[in-house]
Image (cartoon, rainbow, N blue to C red):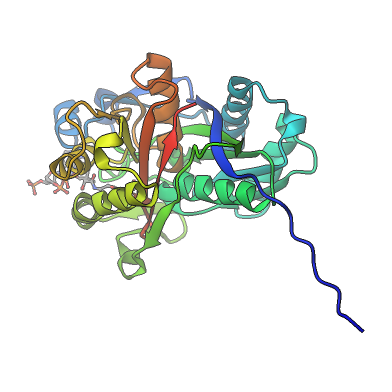
Length: 326
Ligand code: UT7
């Protein structure tokens, strides 16, 4: 008797980002406001981190709420109906409790029925991990259209009096809808982790985020540009092909250090470099799609531009890829 063989799904030739969207809470928090609660100053924060102001969510504004808004905007931007989406991924690391996940609720509230729905925790690298997974699901035939929403309410996990974290982190959500394409619009993901450095960012007593800023800063300014370069190599491009660089918006000095290293290796002087942190703060897994959405709205990134993303953070985890701006 011959044993039956299993059929495999037929995937798309390639994938691309079809639309993006983002949201931020209404409440603007200035550096001067923060200096009322802790020993810091507007000048120090601008000089050392690059943040001018950030947004904090209201007490009753949940991570899931922000994810729904950003996800719905990405669908509208792509002109795709919720009924066409079959998978929702919500990269995040600040959901108040791990059960239930955010993705199933987000799918339901957007009106995406019976979606494959899961959260993904790679901290501030989460969006790039999610985009890599979404792209591969589509190419493998496991999904047709995947909504990836980086969403964070960091103010839930930051001690409001801890000046090493409270001045950096903020709230918001950014989303990308990923679908099939004849031409590659998302390059292979370059990802990895450095679990030997797990102790530099963690949840203290399961309550507040603890970060040892200097080791993370040194690691990010030396180890992340090579990850970005690897993403460019995997996409079969040269650094000089990159129009726009969007690193995770952790600290403007880190962003500039990554850009400087890449320029030393051939990236163009006129490569646009994201500085969305100035008015958004560090929103972890939301920072890259939020920056992309803001930059496209401002016209600093145009449809068809070749964009290099790279995320990095707790874990330590990192990931990057090249994408074509929708
Ligand atoms: O998103 C996940 C990944 N996270 C990151 O990538 C964050 C990486 N780290 C950083 O961005 C930076 O290390 C921080 C922004 C967290 C801190 O900046 P820094 O330049 O590394 O400051 P530092 O800890 O070396 O402190 C320098 C000085 C110290 O004073 P002395 O000893 O030189 O007199 C600190 O006490 O600045 C002081 N300081 C502050 N002063 C005013 C530290 N934090 C503050 C503050 N306000 N908030």
